[in-house]
Every structure is written in C-alpha cells, then in structure tokens.
Length: 247
Image (tube, rainbow, N blue to C red; front, top):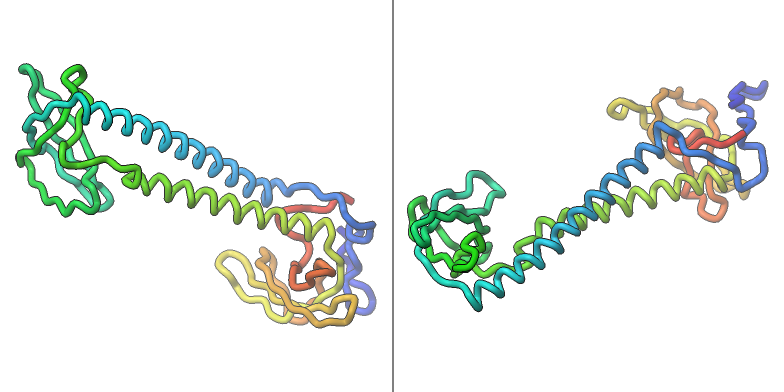
C-alpha cells in the first residue's frame, strides 16, 4: 500500500484501491480465516449435537414403548442425588433374580419431586434386559432435551451472525467506494483503539462511522474510507481486518 501523505495533507489513495470495481480480494489469514474456522467448528458441533439429540430421542421413544408394553415394576433405592446446579439426574439401583442393576434418570422439571438417598422408588424395567429401566412415574419427554436444542439454536445463531459479518465485510472491500476521511476521536478500547471518523460521499453528504484499530490515530488525521454508494451508512476505515485487496 502507498500511504504517503500528499502536499495538501491528504493521504494518497492506496494503489490497490484505484482499480476498477469490483476489486479482487483475498482472505486475511489472521482475520476472516479465524472467523471461518469458528464457523466450521460451530457447524460441526451443532451437527453432532443435533445428530445425537435425534439418535437419543429415537432410542428413548423405543425404550419407553417397550417398557410400557413389556416392563415389570420393582422397588429400587435412590443411590445418588444431583450434586450441583444444572445437574438433574438421580441414580438408583434395584435387584432382579439376585442380581443388582443400576440406572440414572433426569427428574422431570414439572414434577416437584424431592428425594433423599436410600429413598424407595418404583422402577420399571424389561425382564429380558434389565439394563433398560426407568422410574415408573417419570415419563420421558423430548422437551427434557431442551438444553441440546438450546445449544443447537446458539450454534445456528452464531454461525448466521458470523457469516453475515464476513459477507458484508467482503462486499465492502470488493464494491466499496474509496474516499478520504478525518478522524474525529480515538480512544483506548480494550487492547485496541476505537476510531471515530467522518467523511463525505460523492454526493457531498456528510457521514460518520467508527471501527476498532490496533494503531492509534491523532484527532484530525486523514484516513481512507470505504463505503457502499447505495448504503453509505455501511462504511469502514481502510484496511479492513478480514480481507485484503489484490493489487
């Protein structure tokens, strides 16, 4: 980039911005690439979570149907209670044909159940496979997996927001009109600086904007701004951290 200052105090336009639109851009390995990696991680994480939820829900539905049709009741004993906030599972054990079996189940949120260790609890199990069991009075529901659904929604929302940001930033670098701007303030913002600026569009309209930068600027310093002519409120000081222009 050519950032030399002209004799009039206005920085000369960077060479790579002087070409025709749309510009050819490439992803900055330290900016947009990191965000794309984050998107990939959450897409994979959300897909795994969604797949597990579907698999587990289908398994639970089949097991509950088998317990209702072929299950047998037995009195079991509570062996473990929720140990902390967010933990809703209770452990229990029971005996069948002289053998001990154990299980774990989530307490229905609407049940208002209060349990203590060694409390008696009625368990329904399959005689053909006692490992399939569940407290008889606690009906399973897919709504008990709301935490998994919430995680999937969070992943989808984060991916959506990040993709929108990346696409908006790329479009600004590709199609943005380059004009000189003036820094109106520069204040520390965590490990960076919050830079506010103003500029005039080709139509003479005064616009303002701001973004974070690693470097500090003096008030009144001249910088280059990219903005979309059809939406001048979409603007950013150049260079943008996510993409760079191919000269």
